[in-house]
Image 1 (cartoon, helix red, strand yellow):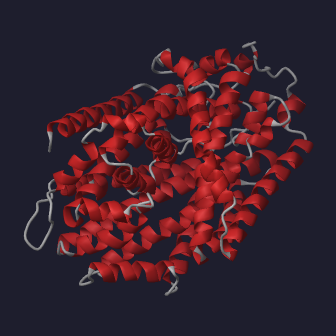
Image 2 (image 1 turned 90 degrees about the horizontal axis):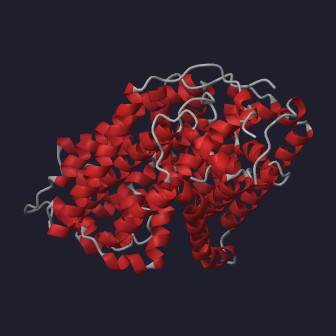
Image 3 (image 1 turned 45 degrees about the horizontal axis):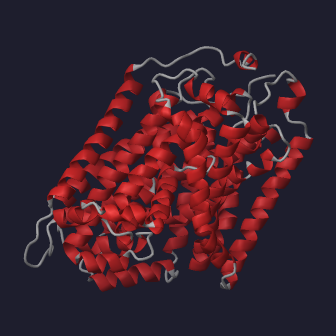
Length: 46
Length: 512
């Protein structure tokens, strides 16, 4: 592969793979919020 | 007002995989490489990535937050989500696009999905073994011209599978399929990508190493920044790949708890789709096809930009030359396409079911079978004629997406109001959304979308005035009838008194 293609593929694949792994890891490790689904708070957003 | 969230997601991972499955489709493996090659290889990738950042991610935030906002008010489809956000009577009719597009795209998409299913079956039975490339091509042509009854049989099987899964509900059907289908898809994709990258040229086999194809795709061409055509193609691909402008993201997000995160969820699902497309999608079809056929031949084959021909008519022949592994490769490739397809088509059914349930008290199971029946009727012209297929693809699968996205971002940023919109995006957020996205959503993305639409306008006029066959006209008639029919149902639903207005007069009004 030529140098510019190699640099681009390494940079883009690394960013995309890291971002995918990072955000999915956060999804797996951050506890899911629970609670009632009232929208009363929303009414106060005036 | 009562909240009508009677169904929902079983787990956060299930939601992410379902949302990523919605986005990951046939386009990730066929359309993306074909578009990249058709637009000059390395010339395409930079505009594509810029479009992802300036249009893809912002629209994901917007659609997720609109969906959750609608869910808070007991609405799971865009007509009344738009109605809740815009409050002016006409907004709900713009929301019709969010039902229309899903039905119209599902009508031809399920047929494509059935091709993948049948090709996986043929790979197992060794149908392609010993065939020359011309014979595989002829087999493909004979198939799509209905020279056998198999297309209809596999299409019916696909429709029944889709409808049955949908009838099982979100957590019992869609989420379970995503949890099985997405890991399988990633595994198949990774094996094939490794095979593509490590492909070696040898006498009687590949004429190029796999890296020749990668080199072609990834050699940057900075002159492409000045090519409007490449930008339009890149923006179009971002729409396709992220399932933006369809209404299905809104629907999935509407089943979230009102305080649950959407920022991290949107980022996770969006980046997962990009991983499948940019990393896996670019490492399979391009290295393998260019490896065996050369750049010029492949460029000619993907001139239309869909990649269907190369995916179905060329790869089976290449796999057949790989001996026993070729059978596994065929099953993996077409199995991968099938899983990518079904996780997307399931997402197209849920807004329809949500609309029927919210507004006409139709049970989920009944709603699923109604959706299946509509897809059956609308899909017949696609099965019978390529002209009808093309009409559906162009009007519903291309133009409607851009129009809908343009409308929704104006509604979100300028009618609902960016102050409330930004607050909505950040409510319950598990990550800090960079402030630059506020500016992008308010100014950059709308301008970007309007420019893309203006750029596409001459093509729209050309297609609208183009002569077509009987089936092409039938498809146009059905599409118009579908849109009008849904708009009529929205009108009737409103007349039946939407509970948002009936039960809660204190409903918050949008800031202007």
